[in-house]
Structure formats: C-alpha cells, structure tokens
Length: 112
Image (tube, rainbow, N blue to C red; front, side, top):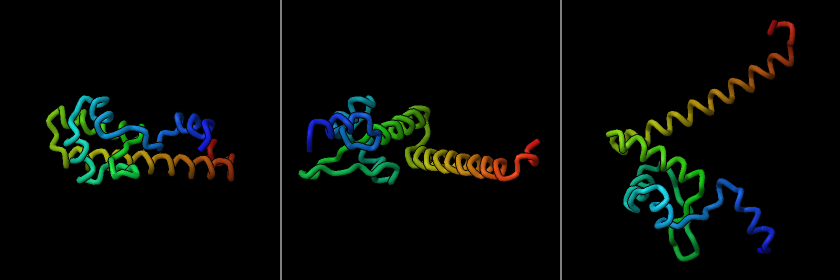
C-alpha cells in the first residue's frame, strides 16, 4: 500500500480505522458497550490480522446514536431495534424519492 492509498482512506467512512479502546474513548462509553452492540448485531466490527476489533466512522455514528438512546433510558436491545428501523425508514424514503424523480422525468406534465 502506498502513502497515497493510506491518505485516501482518511475520507472513507467505512474504513475500520479505530481500535475498540479508541472507539470507546471517543464515544465516552465502555468496550463492553461496543461488544454488546456487536452481540445485538447492530454493528459488526472488522477484525485486524491479530483478531482485534476495528471500527469505522460510520459504525461510530451508529454506536453514538445507540448510546444516546441508552442514556435516555432505552434498553440496549430496544435501542438497536430503533436504530435499525430508523435506517430502514431512511432507505425506503430515499428509494421513494428516486422513484418519484424517475416518474416525474418520464411524465413531466403529470407533476404539474
């Protein structure tokens, strides 16, 4: 891997750049909390060659949302389900918007 390849990954939200310890520190939580999110299958960290968990920025955003819900008193299993449903809703809304744009461009007079 070249230096250019390494620098390119700095902008990649899916690149597993953070160790479990660093991720927990950044989120202000425990490593056990991150393991619980993995057990609940909310996030699945990648593993380093040595078998250590590594997290991406995208996964840290999901974990931060889970922590927010848990801090508000939501059980971790329910928080994980809420986040999954929020993600599914967002994806469905994105798909609907694409279909709407495609239908409007196919028949521009119907949108008026």
